[in-house]
Image 1 (cartoon, rainbow, N blue to C red):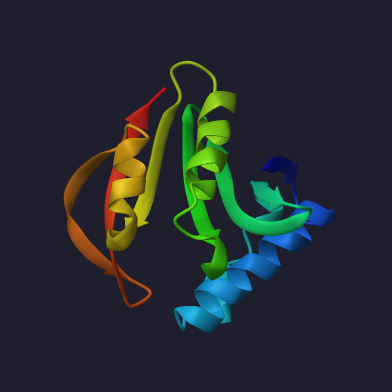
Image 2 (image 1 turned 60 degrees about the vertical axis):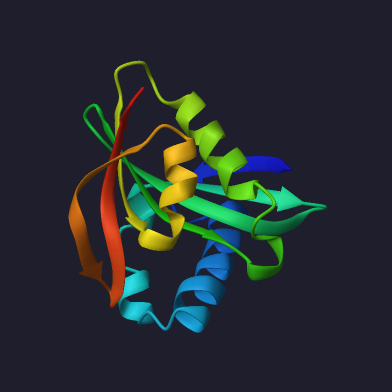
Length: 140
């Protein structure tokens, strides 16, 4: 899998990320497009994983001081359970500076993925956009 990243919204990586997020979050999970596309995409780094030049997995990272917030992790349905999200997130983690604090709100169905990557659950499950999530953290 080839992984590309780009900041902002004026690039092909962003266009591909939006396509994946639209399919997974809006169409499959029924999340409102207004909630999914929250106006922060121009302030983040977008990552997309490509299999045979097809965009299949994405994530975005919001950097604030020594904290990196991992958001909008999504894999197209035919490409799930092949390790693509794991590979993409390993790349994201590898690019973070030592001492960076990583945090994310994981859908409960994805807790296993993040646990494999060394994230730890903090707190109780909560509902966000109608889906159960848990906060997870990791220190690089």
